[in-house]
Image: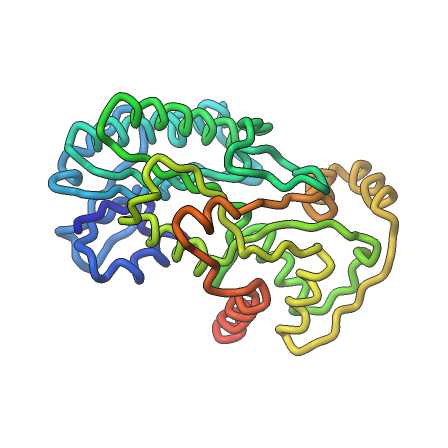
Length: 314
């Protein structure tokens, strides 16, 4: 089977490459180099890009490339940039894939398509109405809608996967910041936070993507993915600290007061993520393609910590 993997130099793309050795894989990225340059194409995911030279005889496209949320975004119009890459660029690639006779298009979307927070008693589901709240989520939602239409009009099978926060070795952003705090065992005022959030270990996401490459029941489906073990921020931080061989030091401040302080210093969105619920119901995914996560949250965190200690990151 011949695969095309976009975003091959990214966090997820690099991990996927290691699992695709049994397939002839064509790699694309906007930057970087590969050892086998004959199978590497430098491409930009845009509405104008021509992908014909890397789609010859491809059976499945795994589309992981995206414009992700950036702190202190310097783009003049970030919303337009998100739409150009994540929506218009994706649909351009999918249309060319359909024309080239590609059988399946696996799209890495985001749980942000469902919304920013789930109700405490109602996890997000695969069949919920799309309710994105920020430019990134909106761009992914519009891409999904376009892909569903392309699938209906052509022979291209579309598989959409919506992950929450993905973590693994060399992870960046918020998860890395929390790992850094855990490595130093910084006391945190989270003792009264009793939320529940879904995360997905890199190994689990890669496992599901590989399953969807040729599973007959993955065609034209939307799959939510997680570690299937929702944890509170307190539990997650405790797991991290213990993985570093220490005992977590937590003290209690009411979530209401935490939000008030965060609002004063302009960090309310961070507190929302620390204190809010974001749970995914992955029952449909597990049942449809007979899939279960391959690592637990605790094991996934241990993998991150082990790599960070080896590399002396913290």
